[in-house]
Image 1 (cartoon, rainbow, N blue to C red):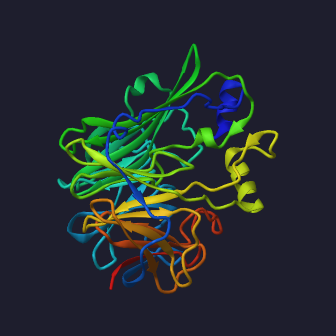
Image 2 (tube, rainbow, N blue to C red; image 1 turned 120 degrees about the horizontal axis):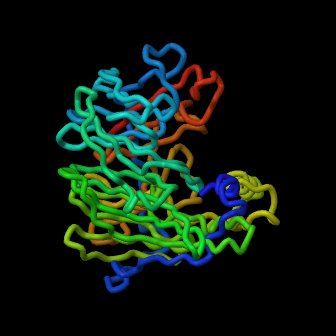
Length: 399
């Protein structure tokens, strides 16, 4: 949530002081302990497939690329959340088509935060926002277009959307037709402000969903202190994924290294490690205060440590990558992940090395195992449209 938005609506800041996380799906499952240190470490070298120019010299106007997904026939979908476009990029790195537009009519996108493509070719885009932000009046919808850019249906990504005036998609993951959606919806009741966060599996044929886990939080409006820990979202913003076999993995806790793996038949197991979170620098704490919308510790409660689990990504071979948040990648690597086998055994730490990356570059991992590096196409406003003059997107694969 973004408390300054809520304060403008409610006349008070929001503190979710009674969180309740439904643990029934994993509380009776086997729990595996993983060692603190990785059994081994390996560098994975990546080779470039193509570079796509997104700067001043590009043929297609590009705003901010915020998400990507594998498309049909080895294409790549790039989501431009500023211009509300999806760029369909060919295996050779050429823009084949540009789809979508902002609006509220049939096939229009009221928001552009996450993108996916279903096996039948439909391209879906969901609205949404960054962590600690509410989207007042958000639809929580995933709007689909067909291959010709025509309307192809809408999924309701938030349960009982009509009762929640603030709702949005927080994450979409899709692999081989298996779709996972994390959402958030907020409503007002007699007990206060109620926020419901859900993780659900969607049927690609009809958009019907089954909730895997949910958390409900209530703000009784008794405090004016903005709490970082209460605003933590347990299922979203990279900390969940679904495999090409339909296995779901997510990290529901902030200050505990704990990963849940749910099988397609509804059974599963959990993996836990005894790890100490990394200490935050003063600069990191100041940045968190800004994200929460407050100036000092009298206005908000910022934690001294980082959360323990970052991104979670299934690999095409069935292995699971879990990013140790706060751990700096080794020299020459752009990211590192701890790799677990299909049965939850800790295999090794993987350092991902990409040639010629800059300090501000961001790496996205596609569901089919490929890697995208975004250079200068993030939050920069150097040329007034969110990209740098030499911005580009680069596709890599394992050597």
